[in-house]
Image (tube, rainbow, N blue to C red; front, side, top):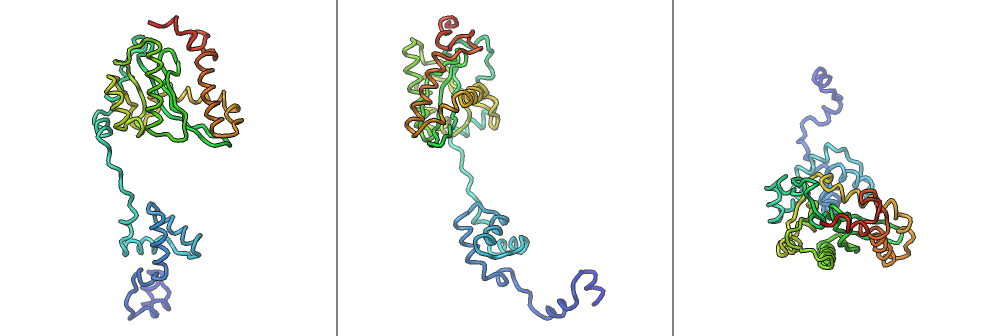
Length: 280
């Protein structure tokens, strides 16, 4: 027996104490923790055993090793309760998943073949200040770099995209541009794959194009625009004393971008000033 205890690294006193006794299940041994563990899981269904362990220690004052905690969760079948149900893809998302890279129409176009007001890129960005945060969604013409439609609100949702799209249509109508046939490129965020948004585009005979899944670089033009806007206008945005003032400042920055700011990509002119030279 001494040899067996030595091989198992088990004190003989422990062996003799437990000899002849029925093994205790984790549920029995840690019965005093069951109520707390159930409460943690109910309030935080996505927690794994590590976070449950930390919560037991931090919020309830119980220290338990992760190994017996894992066994306890298995015995009580609590692991099933902690699984977060995966959202089923919408019909549009399923179609895009099947299309894969083919959904990215923008990538198939040659730069010299893209005319003014024929391809637009859109996306959201969040602008944070001490006064609060707002979301800007904008439609930028790929060639002229004009912000042709936008919306500024406190939510990055489908309604914001639809409002921005209506502004885009109004702008194009003012310019005498036919809306059917244009291409609008975006990422695969839920506002851009919603039935309402896609239906609005399809009913206007507009072709949606989507970045490849997990490749934000496919919409790099928008990323560059947002980064530049925040860098150049950040201090102005920070001066806002309220959300409404912030919205007004962001709107003014877009007007400045279109009509006053000189761009190297637009022949040293503002996008609107450069428009007559490239309109074809």
